[in-house]
Image (cartoon, rainbow, N blue to C red; front, side, top):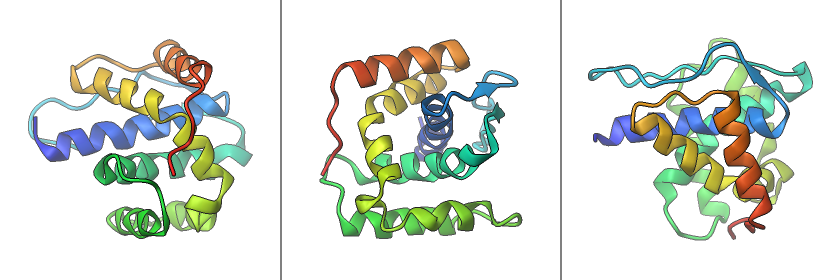
Length: 153
């Protein structure tokens, strides 16, 4: 498994879990493309006020996966900024999502950190070639939140 594929899986899982946290639904289940192409795509539907959070979930999860088990602190914010800068921002989506900085002090970061086990579970589904849709994501989110997972930090 290449690092790029794993990174994409966590990125897409982050979008999915963020949408799941906000009650979003999916138009189609998310899968990773076969072959060496590592661009994933997550299609979701949610209330417009949740768009920035759901967009933010992807880069947050990708940065979190790269970060490893270290506590989330101000240096994590820099890691996340680096991930955000890796993506073209034609529509200003990531710039808009970036309003959550400093993420370690923002509720979005706390909410995503509490759901980190769900992100890891959904990413694992994607890495094994399974589709992650509404049912799978909601189950992962429910399990993570009911386990009493505490935000990192």
